[in-house]
Image 1: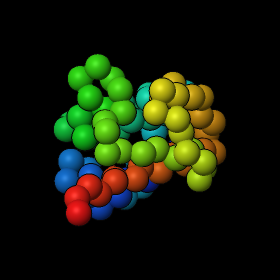
Image 2 (image 1 turned 60 degrees about the vertical axis):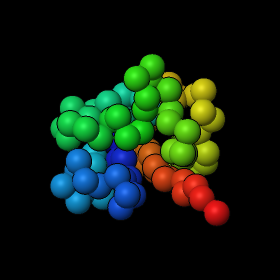
Image 3 (image 1 turned 90 degrees about the vertical axis):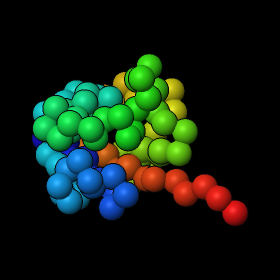
Length: 89
């Protein structure tokens, strides 16, 4: 099953869990599966329209997922990494 790697910034809803195994066929479904287990998580990653939030980046096995490609297929052995960008000056 794919594993979603949650950075410290987004671990509030996951009760501190960093690695969450999910049953999903796409990157989006993986985020939604974490949301199903830990309500409040999904809104940190996806906006109300289901698009990736501005300061969030996703990686699939270390390769960046394009902002418009959250429906990219995942395999059982894949890792989805979430990166929380920091803004400011």
